[in-house]
Length: 549
Image (cartoon, rainbow, N blue to C red; front, side, top):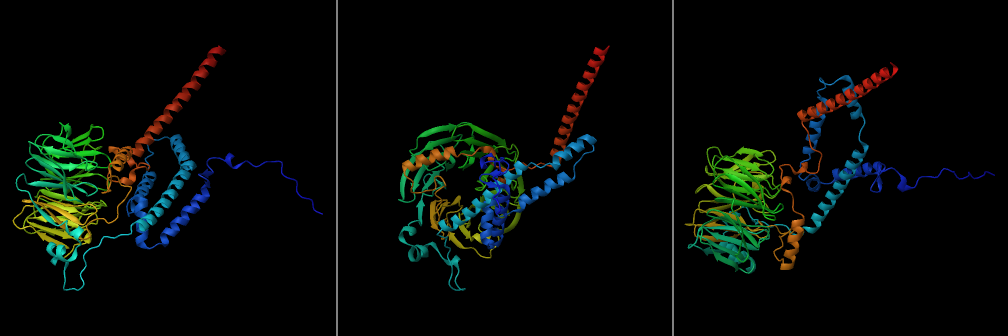
């Protein structure tokens, strides 16, 4: 009868005694690699449309060739190393360090990549579940009908409900005009500022006046700050901050003769540019001036921000567009968009991929900001395009002369033969501003005689993101105060404004010159250490020789 083997006297180490290199948050390195491979296999099996959504959450865009390009550059730098000035001992030490990989760093990178991929798939699934509504465009039943034939009169009397039809109206404001029009982030409040000192805030839900006051000064431009309770008004000399009751809170003395303003909500920055061509960034939460840059391109009246990366686009009188960030004293990119014609207006879509520019040559050009190349252009009649805007769903609005033309979302990618809708304001040209109202199918137009509001079906985003601060139009006072505190806590640093957001939180890419410089520093350190060791050995030998004598 066989005897049972006696238990081993050598006890096994408990799980918590294993090396930290073997476990990463409850999973071994091999388990993480296999889990990541299974996720990538499932990703490849999905349809192209669903796969592109997951990749957009994973990479920040649908393009995955950016990371491949970085890896290619790093491999080329490693392959073309300049070791001519290194000794044999230094080259051997460098190769020894290269041959010994950092396993802890590899495990950490694999764990983070797997976690990011899981989060991207979860976000894509949540987007499909939560986005239950889609933006509806006007579609024709037969080929003989065209959407361009549909007028605002027909929409108001035959097709729209009463609560939507009330958004079609005209305001005659001739006494203190011409006016400028801005909406807040929620689309509930509209800011109307007259050139002769009239400031008013209108509640778009109740169509009532929330605030109205008069200034003994001319107004150049105005915009809301983080919500509808505060506004910045550019007057004749300086920029002033007012609250919702019209009380002056602060005066920005350094901002002189400002002609264009933009507020960056995620960074709490007020960007201004004026007739002197100086771009300034002011932190509205602390009141400090973050940066000041001289464009050196003369006066600037066209300013627009990229909603995707918060980079500012400035349009100049020589037909060029420059891209700026607070951390760079020089422009990031300079594009010649309209040769020999000034830039009159600009607009950037919600994804930050396409930019529309209007010039004095009566052309609207579409540019791909991923390659900084022109895609196609449209010709306007009745005058040069004076105002442009792109809605949340991608509808392009163009104001030229006394006409407004609206193009379908596909017009940014492919040149369309005919527009989506049109609206004419006879005798009220030129049009000063054209703004789409957020989360509503409404477009506000500033004409020479006042303000006109029209309905453009399918222009507003139907789904409200509750995680976005100050986008809820039904927010009460308590919710607004809590949102202000959370928004201040989550405020981003101005240094995080960059063209490529994928570079944030990753290993910085180095070029060949920087890598060669680091190699020289490493070589100098090795030589210094070697010389110090030789000096120590030499001193010991001399000491022994002295003692022997």
